Length: 149
Image (cartoon, rainbow, N blue to C red; front, side, top):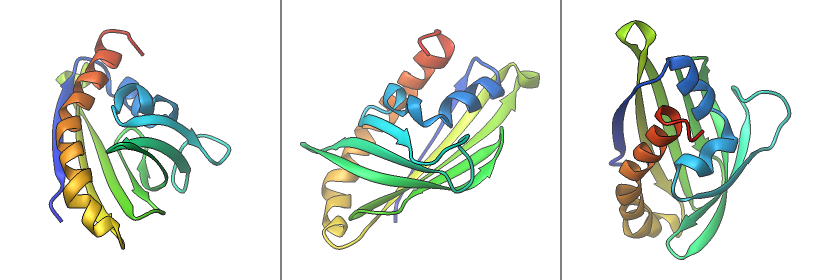
């Protein structure tokens, strides 16, 4: 599988980036295809947490459930899809820059198709993500650096 990898340097502290990006409520603010997101379990987001995300994919709205499979506070986390024909795997990593005054966020994303998803991933999902990934970076920058959060 060929995935996506992007790095974005942000003019804000790592703790602020972490608090924003791991909070599922913020997904629709910085991910263009996300319509809604809600955590399915009680308590703070962490290892084992599940999140239900509604996304625009092509001309449809698709519900997916993501589970946090790796969680190292203020450093990195991984979520993976657990249902549906297209299952994403997202990994985020936070690196402090300039003695903690700035942050590098590295994001990797890939997909696994099952059944019909094997056709959807190359024909619909990857082209949409290719267009969207850079837009998501800009939305994230606006939210974190310019106080739109």
